[in-house]
Length: 326
Image 1 (cartoon, rainbow, N blue to C red):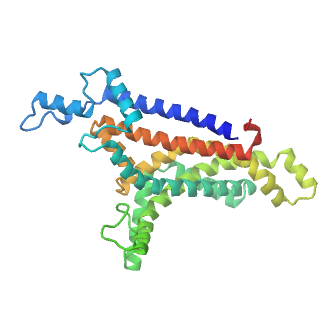
Image 2 (cartoon, one colour):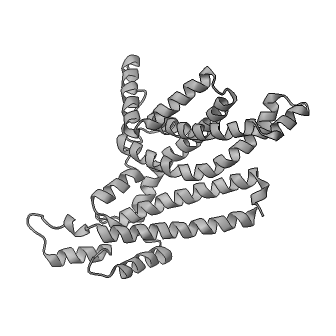
Image 3 (spheres, rainbow, N blue to C red):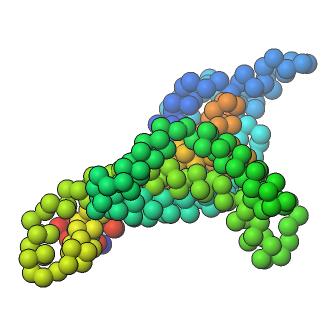
């Protein structure tokens, strides 16, 4: 099993490097970082603009291959992702913002996956009953709802709740309230800020996973080994839990890695809506500001997260299905 996982990790590392390098080359080809410095009043001399672009390592007069090589070798040997257009090290920005993003993404992804699997199994077992029909309708509505719409709805509901109780129990601007001191007050404040974006991410994740899990579970319900287990004296509940759910979850372990990209995109929009100033905001700012180094850095961050989620899905897949370990 260890050899199998190591082979997969090596593949994912190569794909991560390729994805990040392609992102750097594409952004270097299409972005124009010099436009940030032109059109100012008083105008900057071209020599000053050229010096600034050289400092950032994004001077278009330098061949693209040379810029890419310098950028890649700096990362490989010095862990240096370059500077943002504001003059800050990209790695420093990433480390600070990633903590904010991961706080939301990890909790939301795990809870969304668990809830989605449970709801999918429940719907399959109660196929075409009222509860299954209601869940199906809700998941379709949620999947068709844009992320920002759900975020705004949650804000409106939270505002009404806060007005009803007469205090600001639920906060939805930023990841934390400035000036809060003490361990337990900080924990309570963090939960208050995380509540709405986490609910949004969990709802979207559960809606996606539940549809897929329901389909997998329906295929299992009519399998021969379920009928064999029942014929040996197991109750329907025991047979489904011991044999059906485990087999139905196997495809979900692979699906988790692929759907993680969707969750990552959803968390990006939620960060912007709730003013979290995390990696999502950094990615948007890098695009609007023609910040090549920051754009490549955010791509690297996303690729590493997908690498980790893919590795975890491979571990789960190998644990559930011994046939893939060899």
